[in-house]
Amino acid sequence: MKIIALEFYKNGEMKESFALGGSLAAENVDQSKIYPASLQNYLIDTGKELILVDTGLPIETPAFERTPDLMLYMGEKIADFVTALKNVGYEPSQIDKVIITHKHPDHTGELRLFNNAKIYISKTEADSMGLEGENIIKVNFEDGKYKNFESSKKIAEGIVMLPAPGHTTGNSIVVVEANDLFYMIHGDITYTDEALKRNELSVVFEDKELAKISLSNVREFIQQNPTVYLSTHTPEGLNSLEKNLIMKL
Image 1 (tube, rainbow, N blue to C red):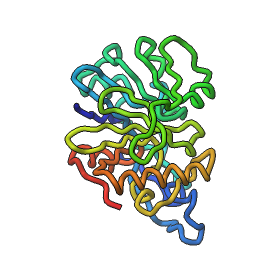
Image 2 (cartoon, one colour):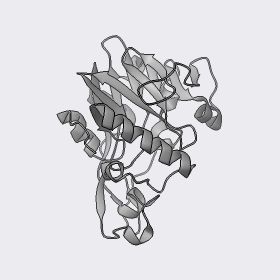
Image 3 (cartoon, rainbow, N blue to C red):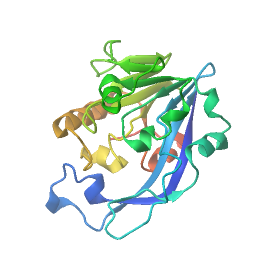
Image 4 (cartoon, helix red, strand yellow):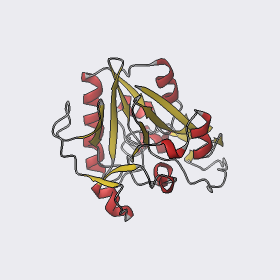
């Protein structure tokens, strides 16, 4: 089992008011605090299958501009999705399965490339996006309890998709068991690891109460299992993957 990062943007930044401002009281937000930002997705090579988690932004996305009032600057473009995949030695046609954590365009932008792969996405998100087709698997998390999560969907041996609503109402996360560790590919449960450690939400959510519950479930999982926390929006995810860093709360 091998997890590989697909890198799209680097040297970005986010303000604390964005990263933690969904739940942190306004008077406690450090207006001068900046956290590093990036954009990446992850590919799982099981040795038998290639399983992609999320599909980045559309190739036609224009460059992002850094402005003083921007809450999240994605960063400088490294590669579009296809180029990023080729940079690590793979082609879109080789992908067997795609797991979508949620509907936002930085996670679904190149879904159109994978009509021949099985697409796993929560039924809530699939219906919201109007996704139909024989390759679309609308996940209802029918495979029972997994650790402290009450429901799950097994994608392959050692790979499970878990419901984590709040950021979007059909949001999900992915856990990969490998090397006696649990690699949590969490989409946007948090935008920076500091939010996880401080138990705070970002400003982006559809249901704040569900987002709080999902964050609590993720924290409980990490406290009970040796977990490498893999983010989409901070280079901390890249560093954690490279060094197999176990998240400590």
